[in-house]
Amino acid sequence: MKFTELGLDAGILRAVADQGYDIPTPIQAQAIPVVLAGRDLMAAAQTGTGKTAGFTLPILQLLSRSSSLSIKRFKPRALVLVPTRELAMQVQQSVFTYGKHLHLRSAAIYGGVGIGPQMRVLKAGVDIVVATPGRLLDHLNQRSIDLSGIEILVLDEADRMLDMGFIRDIRKIIALLPKKKQTLLFSATFSDEIRQLVAGLLQDPVSVEVARRNAPAEAVAQFVYHVDRERKKDLLIRLIADNNWHQVLVFTRTKHGADALAERLTKAGISAAALHGNKSQGQRIRALEDFKKLKTNVLVATDIAARGIDIDELPHVVNYELPSVPEDYVHRIGRTGRAGSSGEATSLVCIDEHKLLRDIERLLKKDIDKRVLAGFEPDPRIRAEPIQKPRTSGTRAAAPAAGRAHGGFRPPQPVKASRSGGKALSRSGGHHTGQRHH
Image (cartoon, rainbow, N blue to C red; front, side, top):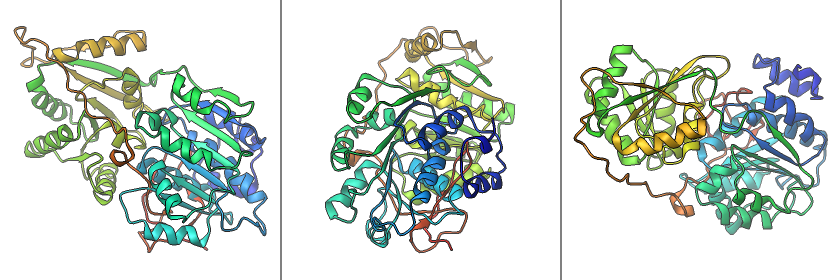
């Protein structure tokens, strides 16, 4: 199947072709016709499947077909709720890219930046708003946004939003939306809590699942190195040096751990940076861009901060510490081995993490290849210690919110609304301030 067979208009197909795409990913092939038909959708899709374009393309078409002389000109018509500012920027970039031949305006709003510029963008009028729940509620409290004209609601990465403690915020927002609307739900997993959230929200939804739930990318080779906790840093340095790894995404459990590891790698002569929620928006954008451009070889990130990171042909992911939730392991390693490219996922496992490893292998329904590097053999005298779990962001204040309107493809400009757009169909990107394009 080709994009030309999905029922998309010429302007959108032109934008897709401009990006060099001809064949949709499985989630796009299944979701786009459903959304164009006006149906509600429940889609099981993980990061890296091309799901962002799976909803932005049909939404752009539905809005553009009824945009002329809209009486709702100063009310947004589509709302996309996302868990983090990185994902808000990614979705906004998709809106910009694929809507560049249309006359629609969009904005991304998230926390960590001033609310004033966002208020001005919203006051000027936008068709599509991409927002994190916390900052959207801030705007609602300031009465700088009116949701009474919403025709389409998207809950993207719903499982992650619930993990981050946004359930109450989401319910407050949903209560303010029109009863009659089209609702699209995207989630890697569908827990009982998610099903309770959407009960009564979706009307006769079409269910789509593009791959076996929690299945890792087939192209990812997975390895485990058994090593003592205190020797992980040295082993990671050795693996990077001996194998000449030039681009490595490393996951830690905590923000402090990410900072400490990045500092240790830098002292060892390896270009590294940390990415987590305590970094400013500018620091996070700079760290990610340097990593994409290979100015930085190692990016050390926490799970929440890494949500929305999407890099073409990322060769290596390292679990410096295993995640407490087995499904998060699948999300982590899914950032490599994309779009037909191969990738490697390496986990450094100490005795404290043996149970976590067993849980992951139980989820995967297979054993992961175990290795020990000479000189780094675990000391059999060391006993396991309880793992200190990081505090989860169960309140709005602790979780990333929503930010300044942003477009794409141009250097940062004074904040203005952007005329539609995004990034690749199975890729993503963009971090610029919002703009208006003519």
